[in-house]
Figure 1 (cartoon, rainbow, N blue to C red):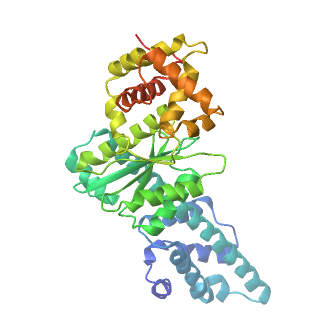
Figure 2: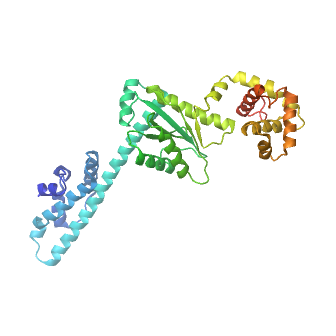
Figure 3: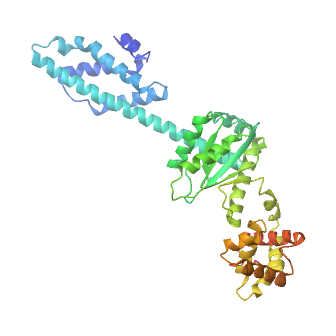
Length: 375
């Protein structure tokens, strides 16, 4: 009978029944509920089936097949004297089968949760090692294969931030990952989180993954949240992913400091600013020397600094910049003249424009004049 049940269940080994027929024999006679140890044994078998890769549906099919196959030969059934006895036995057997299926499912689900927790822990450990370079490169490459990454290749990391930090289990992270995996193979794209950022790691040969990542994030984010995405450059080798990630993260930080509102940023496009601000002492000196005299203005430095920011942001279009600040063109050009008078640099002079713009960007980075320049 167990062989027949195994065939009916698609080949699930009879070892997962382990004593079930004996339990049915006992229940048919006593009509009792299953004991705690009997239920625990089914939970353990359910867990073993999950670990062995047996489908829950097939496992349940195995048990239900045994129920109807052994029914007629149960001792109490063959000895039953009337209809009422048979009905009582049937009720006890069906109740036992119900309890057994529940116990199997509980054990199966717990094993699956444990496996998922283990896999997630391994995934998180791998991500941490990948971005910290703490693991042997050979071992790291082996582990990377499990997650579809070939560290010998070239990869691009795209990082996203929002008003609320991203976590591995939140709804936005899961949804963006699900949408991406509908378009790309799971061995091509890895979605994870780090330090509140949502990351997409994709081969350099798959540049549209970054575009789709940004598009899905925009569609999935709640209306009350604003997101921004930065795309790192493609880099090869085991250290390439870390380097691309650091570029993407630095781009987001730089954009925040400079007040850049573009929803998608490129590390390549902002590379010049990263180079410019790498020497903090030099940029402090530049801001203090070039823009420091603006403090002598009657309204302080901020109005004139805003004037310069608007002027440069509109491509040196005085009329457009004036509209942005709700000023007349005459008032705006007066402010430009004040900048020239106080600093000695004319924002309308192409040769002096770069110095002023670099100083303005440096002021944003240093949050000047709201904060005093460091010594």
